Amino acid sequence: MFPHAAHADSIPWQPGPYPGVELKVLHRNPTTGGVTVLRRFAAGTTVPAHVHPLANETAYVLQGEWIEDATDYGPGTCFFAPKGERHGPHVARGEVISLTIFDGPLTVA
Image (cartoon, rainbow, N blue to C red):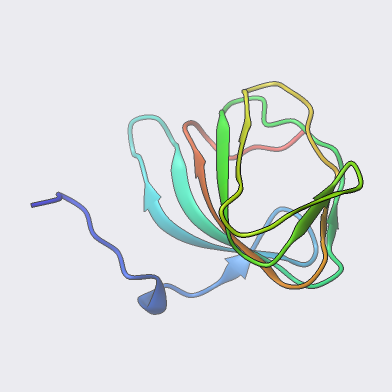
């Protein structure tokens, strides 16, 4: 049995770090500060290039398409950004939903 279980339908969306981005926090690690989240990007949202100084980020696209460097990435795409490495901008062609894991605190610089 898993010591933690969460059902996304029972968790409300909350504002993310950028306009047009919302999060559902599925799990928060009390030791590392890491989080597993569903992220929802409204159609047309652009997230500027940025850095997560305290966490590696792994994102898996569940729905919709992101545009990065003039390339479309749809469902099934997995992105990884090492802690401290600049990435983006991300542009949501339509509504995008991703499952994203930050292995440390979710901070943005």
